[in-house]
Image (cartoon, rainbow, N blue to C red):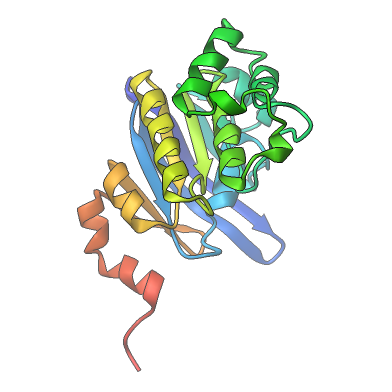
Length: 238
């Protein structure tokens, strides 16, 4: 593992009886990068996130974070180490205000109140800071959900469809939040179905299909890869 590698996944596999959801996947992620993870529905992307972050245990394979084997760590232990994730569904606390949601999430952060106010300003929710999360729009709730993990000042964040179902204004705010964190040194891997965003925001792209890592490359390389085109659209052979 090089000094610039923050995450290494080695032969990760997850089986559910006869079904192999993740099949011998290996890759490394360099510190400070934004990496896309794409693939058709059912390719194994969310399961891979679960295995890396400790939500589920792999059937085989290892995960290394900053040089240490974290394969058997719990989700909570990985959060403490600086490896966090978001989920497809928002996880805001509906009966707490925006500010309270951030402060609750910040138990491991330094100077949480100052950071909370900084992030609230960054996402333009100052006027909603004392509004209950249940009273926010879906896009605003998603923004708060992502901001919660930013409160931890993590080293790496795995984002599972952070832009799904949000309008262009919210999308821009979420991307602004990602770039602000990257400037602080945070590394990102994110699953996203909007190929325009993936191509414009990611330095490299990992492509999964049927549980396996199909290819890895720059946006230009992935766009022109016939295997990727076939995975998404099927073979033209009759």
